[in-house]
Image 1 (cartoon, helix red, strand yellow):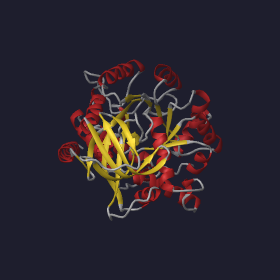
Image 2 (image 1 turned 30 degrees about the horizontal axis):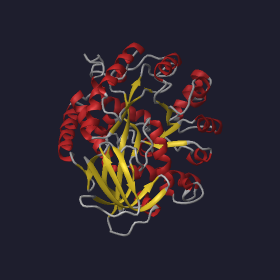
Image 3 (image 1 turned 45 degrees about the vertical axis):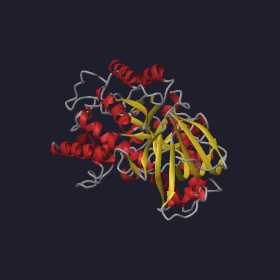
Image 4 (image 1 turned 135 degrees about the vertical axis):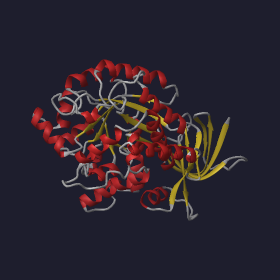
Length: 450
């Protein structure tokens, strides 16, 4: 079965084109014709752009959005937020975790994300014992992706320690923990369950705090041909603790002891020296930025202008899923740089549209980080498409449309296709009512146990 989409304008690999007719067959784009006319049965849209990859998500945290916004007797920080997160993580059943993931993935599709990188560390039962199927919770993530239709790069987390030097884990981390043999069984189960052709499997050594160097070398040796994602240098305390434990900063240590290359995605990498910034850019690794979560947690600002000027690669993710929005992640990425540099249009890198520059960088970096095909409207590419519509009915304007989407409110996501399936129509996912109901029941049940 083929589907025809007629777009008033479309962002093709060589730039914007008018009156573009795109034909889909199954999961693939089979034809792209410019200067065309609509045919009977075509779906008519405004501006058509490639779907975005969300390179960093903890789906279960969607269920606690807004629940950690209370200050206690001490200064609030990432570390106090983490205790709230641990408490919530210990409440969820597998069924509830799937319902929460479905809600997050549905909202991602409605926002214009067509692929998610699930940095998944909720592995075991609530008391910390392994399920009969060691991949039980991964199977729930895979099922949620299938139910909503989003493409998945699944990144099971290896987590074994509470801090640098292989310190014993604390009780709040009991659902996360593996040794190398148990992790291998998890990976086998996840691989067997991932049957959709566009889905991918990688690994996520949680951080240099949670993984010893010996364990990380073993993981890279076993799984280094796929995506490798790691949290690093997110917090100043993390940097200070790493220096005390090893004499080196986290990024400095990682780059000195491991073969960091284009397979790697360094999540946050917020606190860097100039030398570290240059080293990451030269390695070909992607830095995974999550501006909404980083702002929510008070992490700090990544040196994006310097990194991009060095040829560095970035993508964006929704991380804690406190808010899920392509446009807000891109906008806040730019606004943070404006506040720091006290300039405007910082990440346009000197010329042209800032919206276009942000979109292009995040599309390329996200796809690389998640081992996904190139995100483009071209014959043979996966049919992962986002249609933007002007709510005011104003005529399109190529890059101006992107700028008005990212930095305004009048252009919004109208339709989304992932792997050729028309999942979002007029801004609403086809399964919204049922998914929202399951989510509400799951979060209600989890909170009743807190």
